[in-house]
Length: 323
Image (cartoon, rainbow, N blue to C red):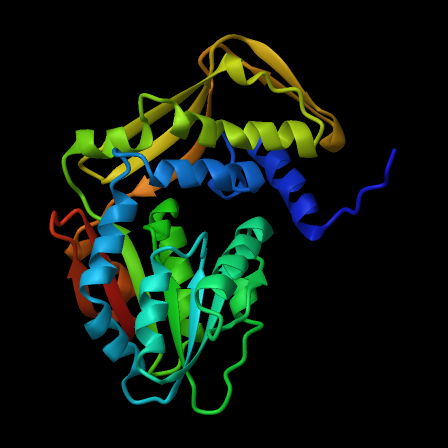
């Protein structure tokens, strides 16, 4: 058998799976949805009519690209455009094209945990925008940000789009924004995408489509455990379930065991017992309103400079600066 190279991410994956499936209640991190297969499924999700988030944010950036980039380029002649969780960059390309027309010197630095997503993005950018200076970085957000150094009098613009902030619990979101604030200079900015509170059924439909695409996305984490950690999950024995609490604005995704069963994960020497209807919590998708974002930013030492919304007022992009 060909010897495989064990990376730090492989070790972290195994450790997180072990800790999550031995905890009570059981949980797994949504960041592990993403690999070659997961990236492909997420592309399908973004094309679903029920999944409004991508189109709404695209609408915001397309309608407001001029004022947004004017704020980015104010008081500087060089910027680093740092995107956390870049994915396929389809929305960011709107800003890249707009910036290219300004004549300002800028570098685009997409950061993603998925090397596959970065490779695809780099390939598409080289074909569509060959003159743009692109430097991809694979890894976790904060640790990778620490490795980036400014050149001269440059300004950092941190993009955190797609309502990725919603995948964090309040304390985690606060810690994350505080760490971003700590890395910023006085003129630096964050462009933060946030899904807004709205009709609960609209939100439920976005995460539980009738064709089963979101179900396949959630179950991809079990497929990864099987292929990368030598697990024996039977995906058909788990049900994908979505809940939404309109009072707190919290949507949660679960994988529910349909029967009592035992799962073996050989590479981390783990046997997991499931009761019938026992859950694995896989994802949180927090929805916000203006007051919650204002308060969260203030707690992190930031303030809202400007906010942009789509025509349906489903989604908002906030520009945050140091308070």
